[in-house]
Amino acid sequence: MNTRLLILALITVAHPSIIRVSSLQLNPDWYKLEASLLNSTLYGPVMEAVYQHCSIYEDATTRSGALNGICMQPFKCGYKFCDPDEYEHNLPMYTLDVRSEIDLAQAMIFARNHSIPVSVKTTGHSLQGSSTARNSLLIWMHNFPKDDEIKANYADSCGNIYDKVIGIGGGETWNDVLEVVKEDYNIVSASETSVSAAGGWLQGGGIALNSRLYGLGIDNVVDFRVVLTDGSIVTVNECTNADLFWALRGGGGGTYGVVTHVHYKLYEPTPIIQLNFVIFGRNNLEVQDLKPYNRALFQFLNFWIMKSGTLDKRWCGGHFSQNNLHLLFCGSMLDAKETFLDEFVTWKDNKLNKDGMRPGIWGCLFATNIYSNWYEYIRGAEPARSTNVFSGDKYNMNIYHQTENLSARLVPLNEIQLNPSSVRQLLLSNTVKDSSFGLSNYYLGGAINDIAANATSIHPAMRKSIFSFHTIGDVASKAVRDRFPNNVTGVDYNHHYVVEPDWRQACWGDNYESLRQVKNHYDPTRLLNCWHCVSYLGDEVPARFTSQPSSSPSNALSSSPSDQFSMLPSSAPSVSPSNAPSNLASNVPSITLSNIPSYKPSVIASTSPSKILSSNPTSDPSS
Image (cartoon, rainbow, N blue to C red; front, side, top):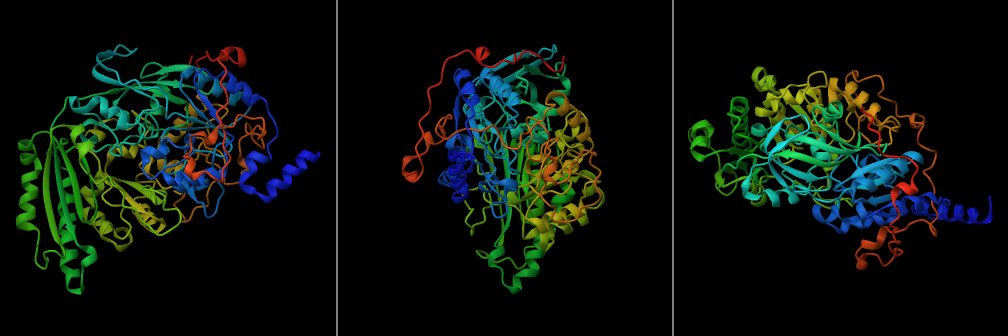
């Protein structure tokens, strides 16, 4: 070892947090990537110490645009398996603030030529940490150009005509889209509007609070534009790259390519009627209150479970838990009254036993609100989308604290039809009741179930479900999983548990093998190799509970590090702290970085990408 490397090795031992900067040798190829960029910026090398400064950004919108893309909304998910107590940081080596498809294509070619793993992130909402990967080149879509053009009678390349669609750029959030749509249309959107509109939310399924009328997000996609790992830029719809169109609608984000654009359906506006009901005061109860309080919960859940499977699909969605209901009707107040609202009021007034309720201590509250359209509701309402945060530890960094412990499981419609008492008993059990995640048990069914189970790649159980139960922590997760195991149902991918046992089967069921084949076709070298993504190959977190025997495909791999796929080098292509592009901290507020070195963005050359990189991004692997 020469003197310079010996010094670097000693620095590395003394300061493990700077391993990625100090111990990596010079590789001038990073300059080639930077020089090839037309209007995008390469930041890095990433220093792990900087990640702690993500905590100063307390709201999701600000955090998603901070520190050149390294921040995760659940702070713990900046660590491997979202577990900072047991594992190291899980951060990229460089981030590319991508502003054009051609720059993205060049980055893919560069990464493929040099065997650099690629991760993809827009806003960092992945509750499993799937949008970050150690020593990867992070494709940060946050600032990718917007579209926002609304088109009438849009014709796709298959000859289908769509009444109204909106074009959504690959980096847009629902905040962006809703500000264009406004009061003119209804649209299937995430209730947390800081979430990306074309990224993980959509590609993971896209449950919305109006999905019972309009379907999931994936049911509203007309077409995608995608940059593949070989640099190809392709259109994807039901007749062009149809297998990829199927996979992108439910098979998870950051897996098959990078979505840069979506055409998405719009609907005529309707009033939104909001029904709110709560049995309040649990924390105020005294001994004499326990029996009447539990009786009220029993009666509420008994009524709701029995009615939920019978409602008109214009009762378009909502949330509920053991003691409350937040339900939406997409239509007029008159129709809401005729279809369920009057019946609910009658039950509340005449059938709910109120004996023992004490005003101001515990009781029930009921209210309705009327909104003129979806925009007025989603921008102005408080639809129980505020996270039920838990405080008390050093990682409580923003409202997404504890979501890395969130678990979701689909409840089949036939379960509430055949075994309603069993479902009610599960919800009322102390194990589940004490760990319920606010109001975010989703109300499903309706138009979601009108779509054929094999029409999209989401778990087939989604098309036969009525609820998605959400809990926090291992014990409650196991209780719900034991009641609704993988041979009966599966999970809502976007909200599933980061340590879900047999996660391949839980996330996709019988669709997994077909998804794996699509993955192998479009990304044969697994350049996109994210945790809890199709064909992921690498370390697995040990299961905390024993699950039933796996029925997932045989390519589900062991947790042995030796399973790392061959295209990855033993260490990522190296850089030198003195010579490599080093722009990471340029956008960090100076008041927080007195102890962190300052980096200035390097000058980006305007050299044509085709003159820098040898591969030609023209081939479409589907052809």
